Length: 389
Image (cartoon, rainbow, N blue to C red; front, side, top):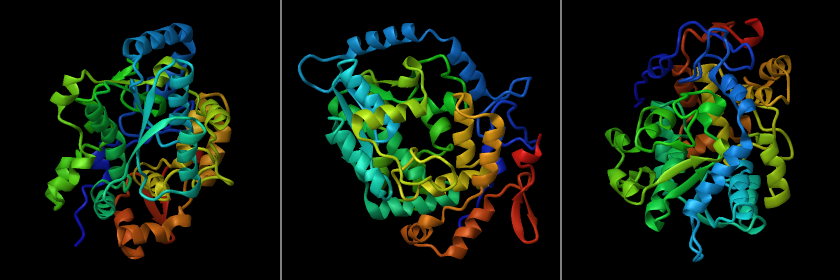
């Protein structure tokens, strides 16, 4: 029986009128993004702020922070949530080798490892010399939650996001390690709520549900027939336990100017990171989000829900970093954003135990009428960026 959908526009409060940033390729359909009176998005305005930041002063703050938490007895003194990808490997390796910390990398397993993803995971441990704890959830439950998340949130990646966010907090409580260092603050780097734009930290008491979980905490999935005990690995530890160890979640991007391409070069040199042999589906890049065979369906559903695909995300950040022009970005979006992730499509159907027809029924239910229309029997965007100038 199909679960009734609430619809994208209502769930995410998307504006009816579609606006594209004058500087990058993002639109106002990205949840929580804001635009100024000049038509510039919050992420581009934050990129301008980064140009004026005194990064030497920020590095001094990072030294002070590390001195505050550094242990001299050989115990772990910082947790770095890490898949072995370029950004997290960079963060952990830098903390260990430049700032003389003793990091414990904590990994929440992908749905299904890719070959290159697993190689990079192993490399950041063995070549990067980083200690690691790997959390792998019950496969049957994870498949159930993946299908459920596709239906009720329109994002099959949500179970991974739950674990990626909450498993490091569980390890922090278990090991009594209060200091957690993530890479970038995605809300300010990619366009979202600017609450933490001028803060090095994230408030675990309030930010999780709004910024990362599409308004649905893992424990709420019990209402859809999931046993509560099966949801425990996905849940945040009790707040009193996090408060008890005085947990602090920080972003390396606050202390170190965040440039993904530079992180890639660093990880290649220092942790044995390898990109794909060819580009990733739906985009032109080959070194980001490589870990999971189901990655492409997270980006594809974002394209369906918001009209913003993987190429949009990549081009927007590279425009802000000065690596490509907006015209180049628009051309890349036109070429790749709509691409269907066919490489692992049958794998995805098998994983969720669904038929192809059901998949597209669910997908089409997430198309908002203000974004999509049918022409000659095919779905097309009403207002693509290349027709919006």
